[in-house]
Length: 212
Image 1 (tube, rainbow, N blue to C red):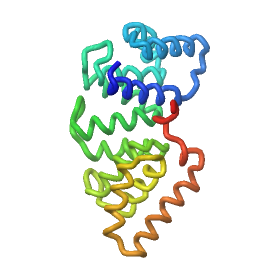
Image 2: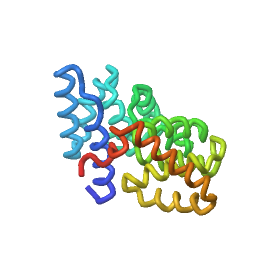
Image 3: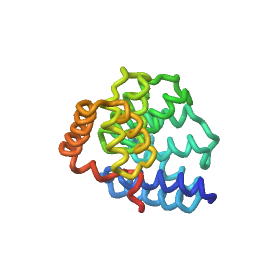
Image 4: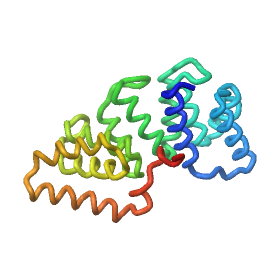
């Protein structure tokens, strides 16, 4: 694997390992076997294990197939197919899939370009502690794309993403803060603190960093 491909693999593996436990032992074994195959670059074997699981409704396998279609791993790259599998997993509450679907809507890849839809999916993933989604929804709120501009809410999401190690979020947070008066900045900081207090199990966890 190249450095970029290995980085992409780590992202998807970290997200998949963080998903809910599979309730059926046989399905869990099939998924684990597919995960090992994917990590070994045996994409055909991974597809063989994950495809039946995905069609049976397993959210982890659905996200995995979406990632493989988006990246062209073992299949022809197909953004529409990726979006379809991401949507199935996203509807089951899988944060990385919600973020991925938001990305596709923001870029108009495989789905209609729709910043409003991107904001909805980013927001759902952000509420689950997905730092990439927190950064993305912050940018939309800062620019007023797909949602009304809201610098206070944008600051909140940038601050939360920055706390999970996103240096790019720190830059955006500083830009927004520089345009605020002290009272507005205090309100924004209070919103971020309130979110952390209400989500203690998510405030220090990022699905995409679990393999570190």
